[in-house]
Length: 329
Image (cartoon, rainbow, N blue to C red; front, side, top):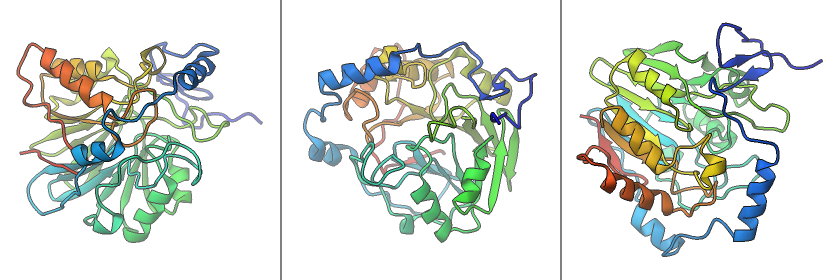
């Protein structure tokens, strides 16, 4: 029997009887994946960083030092952000494995080490997952985190609850776009993103993808997960209120003709940041895994150029090293 979406609501434009979709009509054409792979192989992409991997790590990596204090965050690499708000610790899309892959011997390899070990993490109150791709949801990492923090709460988009329970999670909350949950004094909202989901050849778009807005009395923080640029993203501050701080994905964008549907490039990230009123921001989704055709160091180079070309002050856009701390006060 064909699988049917048990959460299907015909009134919601991102629901289909067979799964989920982006409300705007964006999709690749037949043959696009084959064309990209052939062009990538022929050009020998991606290439190493201009100064080599060791020099890149020296320039853009540091060990994360966790110390108590006010609201703040540590970028742990790729889309993993350790967020401290109201004394609570929340971790987004944790991946500590050597590969972003279902296999230990194949798939995208980590090029920069984790900024800290699981044993060095503070007591986690929540883990937020944006979608099920292997560079955002890693079985080994989740199981290791659950062994250390068996009481941790997990917040995931629709369709991922059973997966996390199979990994050993006991406290899982599944949310649709715009649905909310509470973590004591914090309010969490699953918000739209322009992306897709798949972990096997048989489950494409059967689970939802999302970003997360975490809100306290003093602060509203947006973690977009993976997303292409869409004007519909501006519905998030329109519905929830002014964004005070956010992470902006800037990597896995080359070639743009293929990747732009699902991943923002640095120029799009700067444009969105400006449209939001230039809140405190920092780039993520770069510097760890080679998922597309650009080199590890290209996203930050293009981001620096885009910021220098922006006709406004850009001190609020902070380019962090992996492992670096950013105060939200």
